[in-house]
Length: 105
Image 1 (cartoon, rainbow, N blue to C red):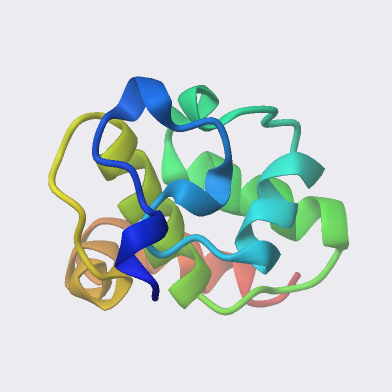
Image 2 (cartoon, rainbow, N blue to C red):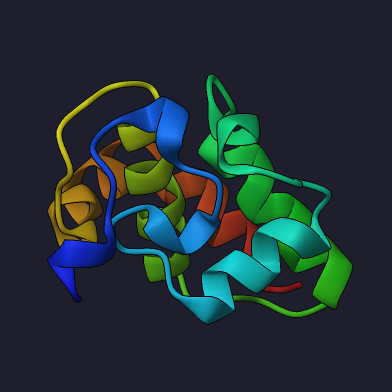
């Protein structure tokens, strides 16, 4: 992660990849599920976005992607940038049964 490319002023963020933890693949997923700009992440439900990409691609996607979604939404909602794996515990606590239900997709 090149920290020099990430903006801390949310209003200046015009590219998903300016958000900490978001690279080309996750950015592509955001576009694929209908998000057009980083501010579209504000107040979104990360699980809803995760379900949408699974449905769109018709395949189960590693839950660490949900961690990235949580981190991006948290960041765009004004919180400090945090590495995605720090959200794994939150994901397991908040979304474990939901993710398990998607495994058969």
